[in-house]
Image (cartoon, rainbow, N blue to C red; front, side, top):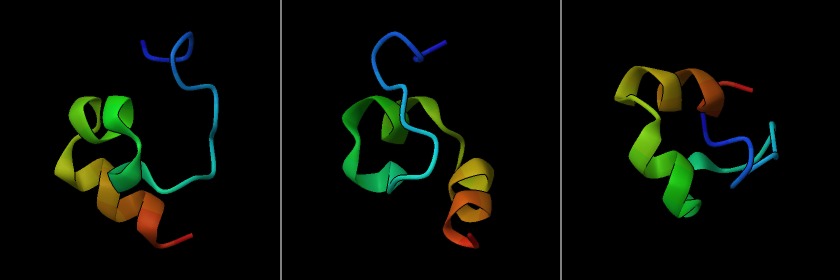
Length: 34
């Protein structure tokens, strides 16, 4: 889900409207660690 809208894998989820909505808080924390 969301790949057709946002194919980026290593980007700031909080600045992407699709990802910030679709991603869970846990997922966002995990992405931030990278």
